[in-house]
Structure formats: C-alpha cells, structure tokens
Length: 227
Image 1 (tube, rainbow, N blue to C red):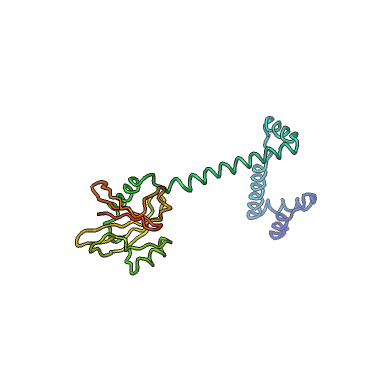
Image 2 (image 1 turned 120 degrees about the vertical axis):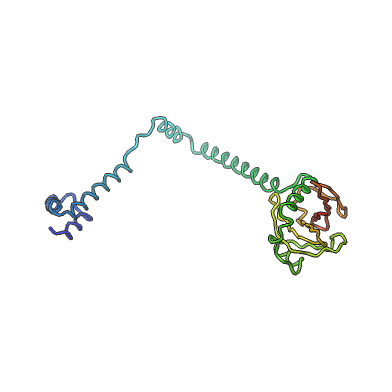
C-alpha cells in the first residue's frame, strides 16, 4: 500500500475489511507522514465522541416530561393560549410605556429646562450647525414637519445655521441666530412630542439658569426661543 491508497482508505475505510486495515497499519508504521495522518484522525474521532457523549439526565427532568405528556391536549392548548395572551398583554404595556413616556415632557417648566441646557451646551458651538438657504425646506427635509420662522418675535436676528438634536427622545430643529454680538437659539418640535397642552397663541416667558426663554405654539408646532 502506498500513501495515496492509505489516504483513500483513511477517508473511506471499511471497518469490516480487516485485511485492508492491516495493510494500512503496516504502511503507517513505516511512513512518518501517514502515521501523523492516522494519529490526527484518531484524535478527531475521540474529540467527536467526547462532544456527543451521552449525558445522564436528572430523574426530576424525566418526571417533568412524563407529567407534561400526561396532560390532556385540550388543557395544554388552554394553558398555551393563556400564556400567549399574557405575553401579548405584557408586550402591549411595554410598547405603551416606551412609546409615550420617554419622549414626553411633564410640564412647560421641564421642557424649558431641557431646552436651556441644550442651548448652553451646544448653542454657541457654531461648527455644529450647517448653513441653511431656505428654513422651511430644510425643516421639511430634516424634521419631516413644516414650520415657519415668521413667528419669531421682531428683531434684527440673522440665521447662522441649523441642526437636528434629540431632547428626551424628541426630534428638535435647533436654529442658531445672531443679533449683533448675541447668539440666540430657536428650538422647534411637533406639539405631539411634548406631552402636555399649551394655550394656542399665548407667549410663555420663563427664566431658567439666568436664561430668558419664550415658548409658544402655532398650528401644530411648538417654538422655544432663548433671549
């Protein structure tokens, strides 16, 4: 037997052909390469046997399986139906909680606090803001909502740029304006996002952390302007 025949026998050996096995073993005893192949093959067999060896199952598990098989089919279906219904109810509660609670603000004061914090942290970092040609078009593209900046109180403010920011999981358009040397932030979001009702047409004025803030609602959009 040569090396080619040995390799063929190793890959397709017939355990019932004892004479072929004897010739293969004699060849492997005198051939270093084939001896290494035989050793690796035996190690592989031991590894596979170890991985798939029989594991004794605990008697309590056997008893649980037996009890489960003895339960009438209709009763098991009923239990499965109750379990499925309970699972759906749990998922509904989770969906409700995560759909509404995280993104809402409890009051206008809470909204103002977060808006002022965003203004103080990022409202003066002008590289964060991209240049805007048409504010209405930019808002529709970025915020997926239409809003008008004509509602800004009178002044000589010129727009510096805009960015989209997320405050308490709500999408806000953050527009940066400049009036002489002063910078102002205008935040715009959908009224559905804030989580509380505002009186249409009313201008709310707050002072938070030394920053004066004006908040109002026009149509379906809510505006918050610093300064």
